Image (spheres, rainbow, N blue to C red):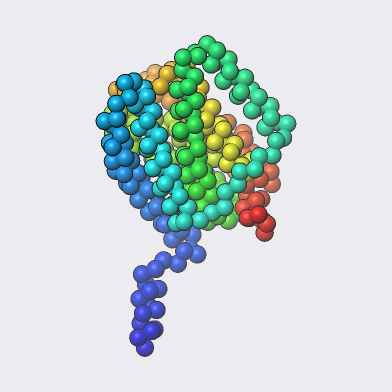
Length: 280
């Protein structure tokens, strides 16, 4: 009698994680907790290093970024246990993949020649942002969503949309360094990039591909504009809003072209994830 009551209480408290609804609840809850801990814990870690004398403002910013990203990766390791999902890194070097990698490499070399003083900053920013963010948002969150919604084409689209929204909301944390206008514009702008990166992962089945694409996005922006050591206040105005909307639409279109929903059989990630041997 006691055992049956304990079992009943256990069933009432614990969620049935075979349910899609409850899996989504777990994902959203994990995302919220991840952001809260990262926000306060990251600030604490960075605060420990804020008084380290570097003699260079940019070097100090880079040191703080390293501390924050290391803490972020520590949380990502914990997140892997809460939201377990296989991750794939093997790149299939098709002719198209090689061509785009060559184009990106040549473009970065040319930009570096014209802005050599910004090369190391751009290299650092690209690396610091690309690996942890792609591992978390494409590797863990998108992967868990794809696992939840199974092999349905519409399930893949829904997974891409939800993971894109999470990636956008994640950047709301930057409000501690900038005003609400700049934060909203940034959130909207990165949504398009996040969708494109998710499409790359679904299409290629290699987490390294969106990592490389993310790296070059940040590398190009930094080497052209320099590393930000302070965030300037941005106000809503027609030109700024139009530029952000255009950026969003361009990356959204690129993502759709990469995905080619009518040819879902070419989505390598879903073949790996849903096949019997996908975990090998």
